[in-house]
Amino acid sequence: MPEKNPPKPQEKPPERRGGWLSRFAPGVRKIVSRRDTPDNLWVKDPDSGEMLYRPDLEASLWVTPSGRHMRIDAPTRLRATFDDGDYESIDTPDVPEDPLKFSDGKPYRDRLAAARKAAGRKDTMAIGFGELDGTPAVVIVQDFTFMGGSLGMAAGEAFIAAARAAIERGVPLVCFTAAGGARMQEGALSLMQMARTTLAIQELKAAQLPFVVVLTDPTTGGVTASYAMLGDVHLAEPGALIGFAGPRVIEATIREKLPPGFQRAEYLQEKGMVDKVVPRAELPETLGRILSMLMGGKRRAA
Image (cartoon, rainbow, N blue to C red; front, side, top):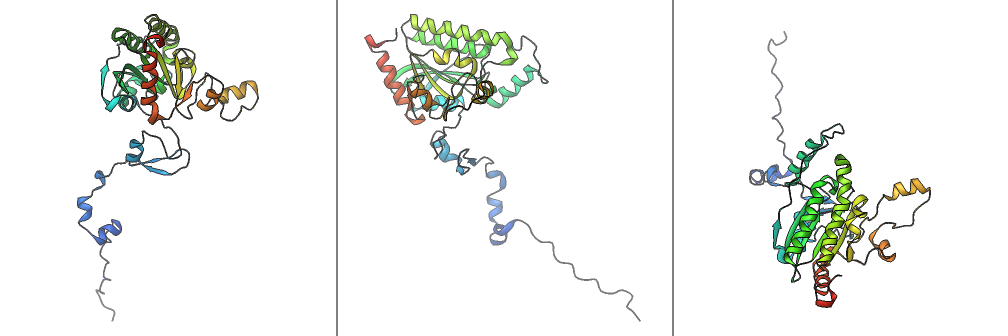
């Protein structure tokens, strides 16, 4: 007769998951938990595809082994520019928010709020006062990570504030540009900043103070058509895209293939639009020498 209660097959104990480290040294996982490992420890090189160790990239001022000068935010730029990273922060003026009540599917006010939360500041411009290789100067930085560095009322007011701060202190003004152009959500109010920033530069010239521009990637649109090209000296970072319209727009318009490297810093230096292409690590010393020379009596900017 068949057995009434046949023995059940023995169940295998549940397999412990966690990989070789858990099997080899179970206690290690408790010491080194997942949350102790940063999610952004590695950054992909946009040129070679190589994975770069983030602390090494930060130490090199975000310049990759292949020579690509990656975009950096305003606080990083200011620390890298001033001697010992020491500077006095200058507040940017407040401006009316969303006077046109603009919406492109998402209200402009909401876009501003999201950008401010991500960046931790009011708008694209940041201003500092300190020394560059021993020469005092006011530095204004345009941050591409804030809505593409677009030029709006806040950026225009910040530029004017930086120029007047330089005049009050009797020191040069240095501007690091990075922008996709005018901020479309502000319409004609944005375009007006091209004229207003130009007038601020005229105030600097009237005070016989130098205005030096450092063109970084990318500098395009209304920014290129205004203060970015009004400096006494124009420096540029290697490989920076500089122009009004982008190369694809130009090619589609003229129906011709553009020369290799067109609108890049090195090409524009050959054509005389840029005075010198300077690697990021050499900018503070180069700027210090130029500013010292321009402020030296007869060599002051006219």
